[in-house]
Image (tube, rainbow, N blue to C red; front, side):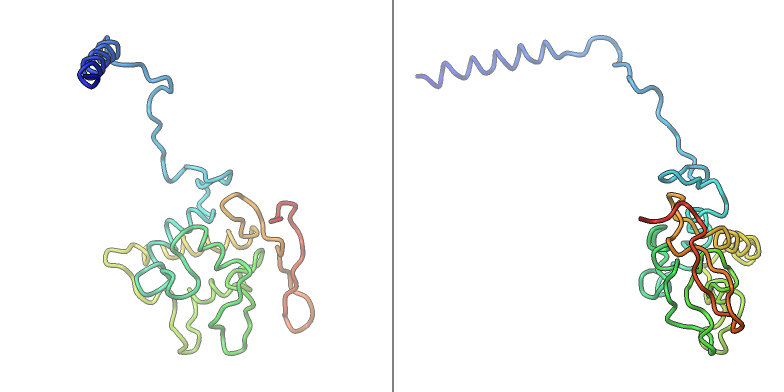
Amino acid sequence: MRKSHIMPAVLSSLLAFGIACKKEGSSIDNPYGKPIKINRDTATSRGSSAADATSIQRLHRHLFAPTCANSGCHDGTFEPDFRTVESSFASLVNVKPIKNDQAGTFNAHVLPGNADASIIIYRMTVDLGGNSGIMPLALEPGSNYPAVKDKLLNNLKQWVNKGAPDSKGRYSRYCCARPSGRNGRYRNLLLRTKYFP
Protein backbone atom coordinates (compact mmCIF):
# COMPACT_ATOMS: atom_id res chain seq x y z
CA MET A 1 0.00 0.00 0.00
CA ARG A 2 2.74 2.34 0.73
CA LYS A 3 3.98 2.19 -2.88
CA SER A 4 0.60 3.29 -4.19
CA HIS A 5 0.85 6.54 -2.15
CA ILE A 6 4.35 7.29 -3.40
CA MET A 7 3.52 7.05 -7.10
CA PRO A 8 0.86 9.83 -7.11
CA ALA A 9 3.16 12.01 -5.02
CA VAL A 10 6.03 11.56 -7.51
CA LEU A 11 3.76 12.23 -10.50
CA SER A 12 2.30 15.39 -8.96
CA SER A 13 5.81 16.63 -8.12
CA LEU A 14 7.01 16.08 -11.68
CA LEU A 15 3.92 17.84 -13.05
CA ALA A 16 4.47 20.83 -10.74
CA PHE A 17 8.16 20.96 -11.68
CA GLY A 18 7.31 20.79 -15.41
CA ILE A 19 4.85 23.69 -15.12
CA ALA A 20 7.29 25.80 -13.09
CA CYS A 21 10.09 25.25 -15.64
CA LYS A 22 7.97 26.05 -18.67
CA LYS A 23 9.70 28.59 -20.91
CA GLU A 24 8.06 31.98 -20.98
CA GLY A 25 8.82 34.34 -23.81
CA SER A 26 10.57 33.49 -27.04
CA SER A 27 14.19 33.08 -25.87
CA ILE A 28 16.62 33.65 -23.08
CA ASP A 29 19.09 36.51 -23.53
CA ASN A 30 22.70 35.44 -23.94
CA PRO A 31 24.64 37.25 -21.19
CA TYR A 32 27.86 36.97 -23.20
CA GLY A 33 26.66 38.75 -26.31
CA LYS A 34 27.15 37.52 -29.83
CA PRO A 35 29.45 34.59 -30.65
CA ILE A 36 33.00 35.60 -31.42
CA LYS A 37 34.45 34.59 -34.77
CA ILE A 38 38.16 33.87 -34.70
CA ASN A 39 40.30 34.70 -37.69
CA ARG A 40 42.98 31.99 -37.64
CA ASP A 41 45.46 34.19 -39.51
CA THR A 42 45.35 36.98 -36.93
CA ALA A 43 44.55 35.06 -33.75
CA THR A 44 47.15 35.14 -31.03
CA SER A 45 48.33 32.06 -29.25
CA ARG A 46 49.26 32.55 -25.63
CA GLY A 47 50.57 36.05 -26.02
CA SER A 48 52.53 35.91 -29.27
CA SER A 49 51.21 37.57 -32.37
CA ALA A 50 50.27 34.88 -34.83
CA ALA A 51 49.48 37.65 -37.32
CA ASP A 52 53.23 38.05 -37.78
CA ALA A 53 54.21 36.07 -40.88
CA THR A 54 57.48 35.20 -39.15
CA SER A 55 55.87 33.69 -36.03
CA ILE A 56 56.18 29.96 -35.36
CA GLN A 57 52.38 29.69 -35.61
CA ARG A 58 52.27 31.11 -39.14
CA LEU A 59 55.34 29.15 -40.22
CA HIS A 60 53.68 25.99 -38.99
CA ARG A 61 50.39 26.80 -40.68
CA HIS A 62 51.79 27.85 -44.05
CA LEU A 63 55.08 25.94 -44.32
CA PHE A 64 55.62 23.05 -41.91
CA ALA A 65 52.13 21.50 -41.72
CA PRO A 66 51.16 21.59 -45.42
CA THR A 67 54.63 21.04 -46.88
CA CYS A 68 56.62 18.96 -44.40
CA ALA A 69 54.20 17.01 -42.17
CA ASN A 70 53.18 14.69 -44.99
CA SER A 71 52.50 11.02 -44.33
CA GLY A 72 55.78 9.19 -43.93
CA CYS A 73 57.85 12.37 -43.73
CA HIS A 74 57.91 14.79 -40.79
CA ASP A 75 54.59 13.59 -39.34
CA GLY A 76 56.27 12.13 -36.27
CA THR A 77 57.97 9.42 -38.32
CA PHE A 78 61.21 11.40 -38.75
CA GLU A 79 62.68 14.34 -36.90
CA PRO A 80 61.89 17.19 -36.89
CA ASP A 81 58.26 16.56 -36.00
CA PHE A 82 55.96 19.08 -37.70
CA ARG A 83 52.57 17.75 -36.50
CA THR A 84 51.90 20.69 -34.16
CA VAL A 85 53.32 24.13 -33.44
CA GLU A 86 54.72 22.84 -30.16
CA SER A 87 56.32 19.72 -31.64
CA SER A 88 57.77 21.83 -34.46
CA PHE A 89 59.41 24.22 -32.01
CA ALA A 90 60.60 21.46 -29.66
CA SER A 91 62.20 19.42 -32.44
CA LEU A 92 63.82 22.38 -34.23
CA VAL A 93 65.29 24.93 -31.83
CA ASN A 94 68.72 23.98 -30.49
CA VAL A 95 68.18 20.33 -31.47
CA LYS A 96 71.12 18.54 -33.07
CA PRO A 97 70.23 17.17 -36.50
CA ILE A 98 70.57 13.47 -37.26
CA LYS A 99 71.56 14.16 -40.88
CA ASN A 100 74.25 16.76 -41.36
CA ASP A 101 76.42 17.87 -44.25
CA GLN A 102 79.58 15.84 -44.88
CA ALA A 103 81.72 18.27 -42.87
CA GLY A 104 79.35 18.14 -39.86
CA THR A 105 78.97 21.92 -40.02
CA PHE A 106 75.58 22.29 -38.33
CA ASN A 107 74.95 21.91 -34.61
CA ALA A 108 71.18 22.49 -34.67
CA HIS A 109 68.16 22.41 -36.94
CA VAL A 110 67.56 26.00 -35.82
CA LEU A 111 70.28 27.96 -34.08
CA PRO A 112 68.41 31.00 -32.72
CA GLY A 113 69.75 34.25 -34.08
CA ASN A 114 71.64 32.71 -36.98
CA ALA A 115 69.82 31.39 -40.03
CA ASP A 116 73.12 30.67 -41.79
CA ALA A 117 74.11 28.24 -39.02
CA SER A 118 70.70 26.51 -39.05
CA ILE A 119 70.53 23.32 -41.07
CA ILE A 120 66.82 23.72 -41.81
CA ILE A 121 67.57 26.62 -44.18
CA TYR A 122 70.42 24.68 -45.75
CA ARG A 123 68.26 21.54 -46.23
CA MET A 124 65.56 23.57 -47.97
CA THR A 125 67.99 25.18 -50.40
CA VAL A 126 70.93 22.76 -50.90
CA ASP A 127 71.24 19.02 -51.50
CA LEU A 128 73.37 17.34 -48.83
CA GLY A 129 75.53 15.65 -51.45
CA GLY A 130 73.12 12.88 -52.35
CA ASN A 131 72.13 12.31 -48.72
CA SER A 132 68.44 13.19 -49.07
CA GLY A 133 67.88 15.87 -51.65
CA ILE A 134 66.44 19.34 -51.17
CA MET A 135 63.50 19.51 -48.79
CA PRO A 136 60.64 19.07 -49.27
CA LEU A 137 61.17 15.87 -51.22
CA ALA A 138 57.53 15.55 -52.24
CA LEU A 139 54.54 17.88 -52.25
CA GLU A 140 50.86 17.17 -51.80
CA PRO A 141 48.78 17.52 -55.01
CA GLY A 142 47.68 21.12 -55.46
CA SER A 143 50.41 22.53 -53.19
CA ASN A 144 51.27 26.17 -53.83
CA TYR A 145 54.76 25.77 -52.32
CA PRO A 146 56.68 26.36 -55.58
CA ALA A 147 54.91 29.71 -56.04
CA VAL A 148 55.50 30.91 -52.45
CA LYS A 149 58.78 29.14 -51.68
CA ASP A 150 60.97 32.27 -51.61
CA LYS A 151 58.52 34.15 -49.39
CA LEU A 152 58.21 31.24 -46.93
CA LEU A 153 61.98 30.72 -46.77
CA ASN A 154 62.46 34.42 -46.14
CA ASN A 155 59.89 34.28 -43.30
CA LEU A 156 61.68 31.24 -41.84
CA LYS A 157 65.05 33.04 -41.99
CA GLN A 158 63.57 36.10 -40.29
CA TRP A 159 62.07 33.95 -37.49
CA VAL A 160 65.43 32.28 -36.90
CA ASN A 161 67.38 35.55 -37.06
CA LYS A 162 65.06 37.27 -34.57
CA GLY A 163 65.84 34.53 -32.05
CA ALA A 164 63.28 31.82 -32.98
CA PRO A 165 60.72 32.71 -30.29
CA ASP A 166 58.13 30.12 -29.28
CA SER A 167 54.35 30.59 -29.52
CA LYS A 168 54.41 32.63 -26.29
CA GLY A 169 57.06 34.99 -27.62
CA ARG A 170 59.77 33.54 -25.37
CA TYR A 171 63.33 32.99 -26.52
CA SER A 172 65.49 29.97 -25.90
CA ARG A 173 68.00 30.24 -23.11
CA TYR A 174 70.70 29.65 -25.74
CA CYS A 175 69.84 32.55 -28.00
CA CYS A 176 71.65 33.88 -30.00
CA ALA A 177 74.67 32.51 -31.82
CA ARG A 178 77.45 34.63 -33.19
CA PRO A 179 80.64 33.46 -34.91
CA SER A 180 83.75 33.05 -32.79
CA GLY A 181 87.23 31.90 -33.67
CA ARG A 182 88.88 31.31 -37.02
CA ASN A 183 87.20 27.96 -37.73
CA GLY A 184 83.72 29.47 -37.98
CA ARG A 185 82.30 27.56 -35.00
CA TYR A 186 79.51 29.20 -33.07
CA ARG A 187 79.09 29.90 -29.40
CA ASN A 188 75.81 30.64 -27.68
CA LEU A 189 75.33 34.03 -26.09
CA LEU A 190 72.44 35.17 -23.97
CA LEU A 191 71.30 38.22 -25.88
CA ARG A 192 67.59 38.29 -24.98
CA THR A 193 65.90 39.14 -21.71
CA LYS A 194 62.92 36.86 -22.37
CA TYR A 195 63.93 33.22 -22.15
CA PHE A 196 62.72 29.87 -20.93
CA PRO A 197 63.00 29.33 -17.18
